[in-house]
Structure formats: C-alpha cells, structure tokens
Amino acid sequence: MGAIYRREMGAFFSSSIAYVFLAVFYLTSGYFFYSGSLYSATTDMSSTFTSLFLIIVILIPILTMRLFSEEKKQKTEQGLLTSPVSIGGIVMGKYFAALTMYTIGITILLVYAVILSFFGTVTWGIVIANVLALFLVGAAFIAVTIFISSLTENQVVAAVLGIIVLLVLYMLDVFATYLSSIPILPDVLNALSFYTRYYEFTVGLFDPASVLFYISTAVLFNFFTVRVYERRRWS
Image 1: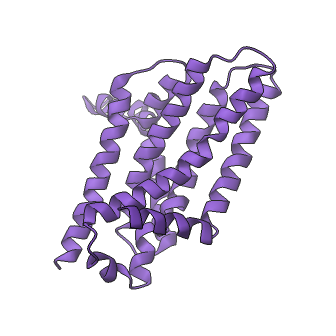
Image 2: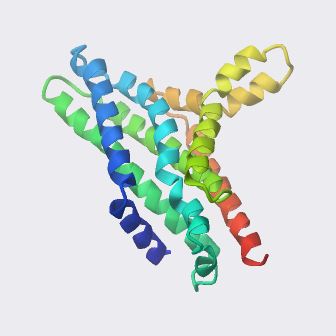
Image 3: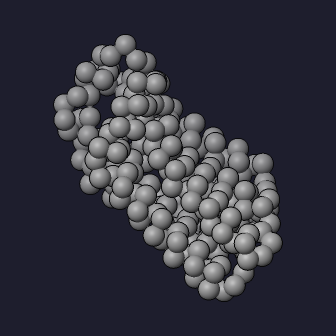
C-alpha cells in the first residue's frame, strides 16, 4: 500500500491536478472567509463551512477522476492487478493519497481561524468540529468518486458522473421535501442526507451517529471498489 500511496502522491504533483485542486479550493475558501467573517467583522466561520460543502462536491470528483480510469486508459491496469500488492492495498493506497491531498486543502481553514483570533475570540471547539465534519464528508465523497473512477476509463466521464452523484447526495433532503406525500421515503432520504448531517456540525452540534455514517460510507464504497477489481483480476 505504501508504494501505491507514494506513487499516487507523486502523480498528483507531477500533473496539474494537485495545483488546480488546491488553487481553486484556496481561492473559493478565501472568498467565503472574507465575505462571511472578515467583511462581516465576526469570528463565526459557520457560513464559510456551509458554503464549502457545494465546492467540495465539484472539486473532489476532479481530484479523484484519474485514480483508476487512467490505469484502464493507459493499459497499466493489468500490470497493477498482477503486482504483489493486494487489491485492498491498491485501493487504499490510492484512497489515502487522495485523502491526503484533500486534507492539505482543508487545513487552510485552521489558518483562517488563527487570523480571526487576532481580532476576537474564536470558539475553537466549534472550529475543530467543523473541520472534522469537512474531513469526514470529504473522506466519504472521495470513496464514492474513486468507486466511480473504477467503472470507466474516461477521466472526464468519471468527473462528470462523480459531480452528478455527489449533487444527488447533496440534495437528498430537498428530494425528501418534494416527496413528502410518499410514506417512509422522506424519512429514509433525510436519514441518508449528507448535507443535513454536515450542517449540524456547522452550528455546533456534534452527533456521533453522523461520524459513524460518514465513516461507514467511506468503508462501504472502498469495499465496492475492491470488489470491482477482484472481479477484473480473475476475469
């Protein structure tokens, strides 16, 4: 797994993906930080974290689109599958590389909080909870989009499908509102709502069930990706 992780981290920085991801994330988060906190003269960063949810819906598929689809396109997939590394090790190496890049991006939010601390009192417990929430939802979304990348050899298709799927997950609570006349379904959609669980963190509500939900999603979709490649290894 370590070799795959190092390979993918190198690939991120040898291509433009890492720089595009970080640049766009820093620019958008900086704008939301300025308009939501600095311009409003408040140490409350909840609006910044709320706004960033939609940004990561768009950026994460771009970050992960090449992880498996490029292997198929470059015809290196079989070499990877016949390597001494287990399928689980391959998937987790790529997953943790993407998660590391994402973590590098969101740590800028702690820098913003430090900046605010020079102008007023920052409620660090809420800031840390928000960063944790952003990390958890990102960890889940990365697993989902890596699974999508494993299903196609076209990076653009992987990115577009990833954005569409994450948008659907983002809007589950909206769908629940429009489908309120159907028994049980709205409750199921609300229970699966990624945004509702995330929003609870932004207002200072820490729910262990939401933490478990995001971790379970990440584990489940990484398992799906492993299963996809196990079938290809023996096909």
